[in-house]
Length: 621
Image 1 (cartoon, rainbow, N blue to C red):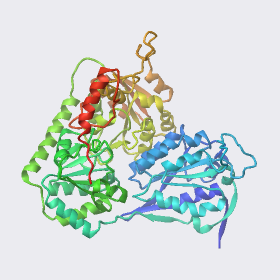
Image 2 (spheres, one colour):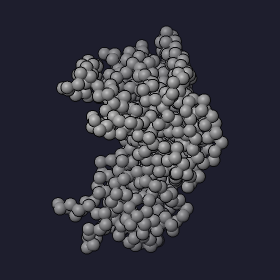
Image 3 (cartoon, one colour):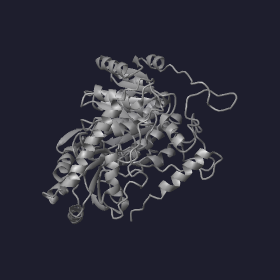
Image 4 (cartoon, rainbow, N blue to C red):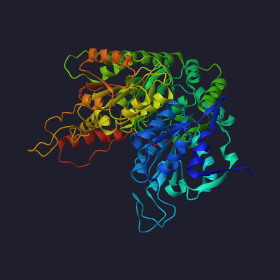
């Protein structure tokens, strides 16, 4: 048998170079390279291998958590058909990636993590940054990856990767079970030599199938739909990952069944398709949530039914409602005691369309749905055109200005705070990949790094990152990486002097925004209720190398966006907004438990309202 004498780290990089995926006859490399920061736990192993094989490109990020965010956004933008590896040193470098790993796994996005680990041989222990435990020598901080990954392994011998790497690829390319994968790599083993079989480094293609639904279950689903009076489709991220948006648009048009979109599924239909009710759930539109409340059959396609989508199990109030779940993941297909169609979204939609033939909803129902679509567009126009002269401006008109400036193929990206909810309701999607929200984990700090990952996946598109001041302060370092690598982003940074989303929630639970605003300590009250803390975000962004613009009002923002489009490097636009000028909620509720006893009247009143709303929560059995 022919062998190649390589270090374990060299063998890993060689293997990754030769992995391909194929779907619908299109084949391409799976890995785009490696992101990360070198340290003593990886520089002599994976670092040396990356230097030796420059065709597997290395990108030097500025924060290990951000590395994983970049990789996750890249995979999301690539419909999970491409991925990055992420490398770190041992200790804090590795644990910095844990949050990113959770984000990738929750959002079902493939990311390969290669954290350095403590020595496999123990004679030199404890090594720098090693966490010691008195009850075991076979544990390190990398064990923290176990609950937040889909596959985890520690490579204590150089030959073990022969068995581990194919398992890594099996999980990363699975449409049902993908997420973060972690290979903990002891720093001494990374540098050890082994005679690897040459076959390990041959090109290997992983085929992404499109499984069809079971014929018997499909027949039962068709019967349910045919006998329904008020059916509803919930379009989740699976619609986009399977590239089923055109199939869904045709199916909705053919049958007249209305569609509500989750955060991950927004863009499944163009905003102006008559059957598109827009966002559904806590951050949803009035039409989507009214129809959901009345629906007798709910067809969930590629959704995992998060509590925002289901309005904490209060969205579906029809006592006879039945669920049909079309999902490639069996785990999600069975939720809500549904009739499970375990299948690829595109294959399942096409099978349903063929089986239903010319069936359509009643004419009156179709007209009502189409009116909801038109009425909602008027509501969006109203919020976009808010002409209140008092400054600072509200968040809604800011979103409107960005939406008008963006071309149909451009991408808006966000993750945390109040922006995701307002974007979900208000953004007019004109392209299936034009809306990129990380809301499975809603992770503060994803925005800038995620924007870079999306841009790397689709360099031909303009990427508009919308980020609040809280997330900016948490993780804006990858602005430097975007400039270093020549990937231009347009970042619209909203300065609202604190945490707007959680501040609004604090008010709703009767706590008056306590601890959510950037204010100095008041020496009299002892609380953070003094003067607003002055932060020069423009100077901050300029120090990172960005081109910086500021805007005070909507016309100023529109001018700044026009100038930003002409720039060739990352541009940050800072605009002050008023956190009290909020976009309202529509026909929905979210379960946030409120203190049962309190000395504050406002909290007691909020608890009364909470107890009333909680009675609407349901089990679906």
